[in-house]
Image 1 (cartoon, rainbow over the protein chains, first blue to last red):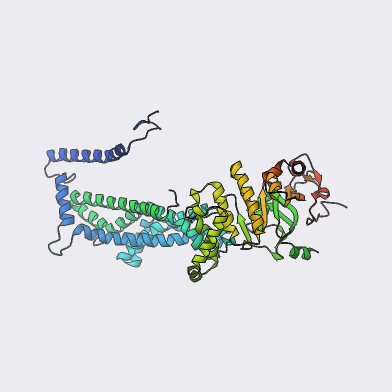
Image 2: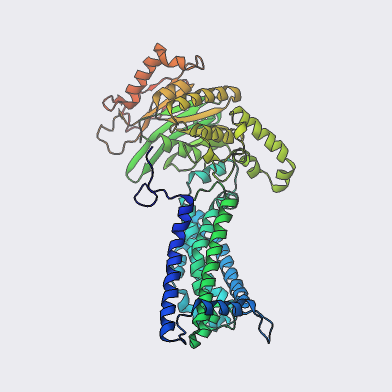
Length: 274
Length: 298
C-alpha cells in the first residue's frame, strides 16, 4: 500500500497527534519571538514598558482578575467583561432577530422586497462608526448607544445573508409546501425558517468580529467600564501589561463563542452539512 | 360543449398558450383527462412538457387558456394537486416520518396536532410501510438513496389524497435498476389507490410502459401557418389509450408495444417527420382538439 506523506503535497494526511502539534506551532513561535524580544529590550532597559516580561504579565493578570479592588471589592477584569458582554449580546441578539425576520420576509414576499430591498442595501452601506456621534447625540452616551451601534453595524449583514440563503432554497419547496396545505405564513415560519437557522448561526459567527469592533470603538469614546474602555484608558500610561492580557482575553472570548456556536449548529441541526 | 367537458373530466385544459418573451413554448394545448387515469406526457427534451406540468400545478401561469380541475379553475397551487419533483420534494430538515406527516401538521392547528399526534403518526407509518421504508422513518432525507427519497416523496404527496398527483420526471435521476423497481412500485400503488396521475417523462418507453393513456408533445409538426412560422410552439401530436396487460417488465418486448414505440417515436421525436396538425394521431376517446383558422384553413 502507498503511504500518504505526513506534511507535504496534495496527498498529505497528518496524523491526529501530529495535527495538534502542527496547530500549536504558530502559537509557540509567536510566544518565543515575544519572549525573546522582551528579553532583549529588558537587557537594554530594565524599565521597558513596551514588551513586558512574562512574569510581569502574570502578576498583572493576577492583579486584574484575581485581586479585589480594596475600595470597591470588585474584580476589574470580570467587571469589564460583564459590562462588555452584556452590550455585545444585546446588540448581536437584536441584530440577529431583526436581520433574520427581515431577510426571511424579503426573500419570500416579492411585494415587501420591492419596498425594502434598495433601502436595506442603502442602509447597509452606511459606515456605522460614522454615525456614532449621531447616536451619542440622539440616544445619549449610555448603554443604548453602544447596543444600537452594534445593531446597526450587524443587522444589515445578517438580513442580507439570510435573504441570500432564502433565495438559494429551491422554489419547488414553496410550491410543494402549499400543495400539502401550508398557508403563506406557514411557508415562512414553518417551512423556510427552520431551514435557515443553521445559516443564521453561521452568519452570527462571522458577525462576532464586527460586533467586537463596534463595541470597542463605542466604549473607547464614551464609557466608564468595559474591555474597550479599559484598553483605551490605560493606553495613556503605556500599560502594555494590561493591554496585552485584555486583547488576549477578548480574542479568547471570541474564539470560544465561535466554537460554541459551531457546536450548537452541529447539535441542533444534524441534517445541515457544513 | 366546453363547459360540459370541463366539469365532466378531472383535468381539462383548453387553448393553452405559454411563451417566454418571443419564444412560444406551448401552442394551443387542449386535453381532458378522466378520473383514475395514469396519464403520461412525453416529448423531446426542452419541448415544454415540464412547463405544462408546472402550469397545471399553478407554479407558473399561462399566457392564455383555461385549466379546470374537477370543473373548477385551477389557479395558484393548492391541496387539490399533489406534486413529486425529480428533486427537492423532501424537506432536508425533517426526518422521513416528519416529511410524510407534514401535510397533516400543516392542515391542523396546534391543539389538534397534539391530540391527534398518535393517529397521524400511525397513518404516516402505514404509508411508509406501503413504500417499504418503515425502518427508515427516523432518518433524514440525505441519509437515503435516490430511489428511497422518491418513495418518501410519493408517500408524502399521496397521504394528502390529492385529486390529481403530478409527477415531474420523478425517476429521471435514478439508475436503471432502481428505476425499473420504482416503475413497478408506482403501478402497484396506482392500482391500490385508484388515483389520477399525470406523469411527465422524456423516456418514451417509460411513458408507454406506465400509462393508461399517453400524450406525446412536440414541436415537430406542420400546420397551415407554414413551416418557418416563428411563433410555433409545442402541441400534443399524439394521444393514445394504452393497454394495461400485466404489471411486468415483460410487456416491453411485446410486439404491439414495440410497434407503438416506433410509431410514437416518429410522431414526436423525429425532426423530419412533420405531420399536419389536423392529422395528429389523437386516437383516445377523450381527446379533443381546437385548431384556429390560421392553423388549419378549411
